[in-house]
Length: 224
Image (cartoon, rainbow, N blue to C red; front, top):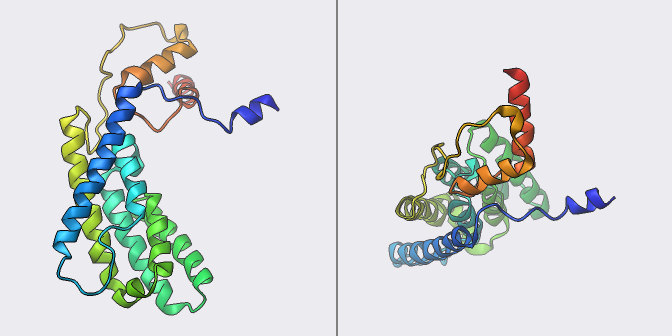
């Protein structure tokens, strides 16, 4: 039971506070820039559409706090959000019950993103927004997928490229050696602390735990 209960609380990330603060600053800066940029671009619109959609807050967490995650790469961000918006609008038009429409929009969006290799969790919220966002979004129809969804997503992705690159992170992510590579060590001499150290020295927050890394490593050794 203690082991089961402890699984509800993840272990602290291997990276330090400096990396966590970097992600927080980047996300806040990204939202500010895309908010003002989208407001300027859509300034002449009289549709009542929001300049900034709420799911982009979740996208910003991924792009700046865990930019190495496969879920945070440019195609999942832009493709996932736009595809989910298009599916959400379609569901809202063809299904009268908003709850059923929201469920169908979410399920179909996940399937489509998986098929097109652009799974992005915040896109699920985009699909629900297209269905449940209110009269202005419903009236905009498929235009909602362009403004503000595509506009917001492109601007956030551009800011992420600039900010992550400027702060020493590869984005779009490319695998790279650790910031402080360790000397070669005998494979059977690796301890749990070694896996924690590798994640800590990588220089970016990876979407994997030290325990999972060890499982993958040991499976690779068995396959060698």
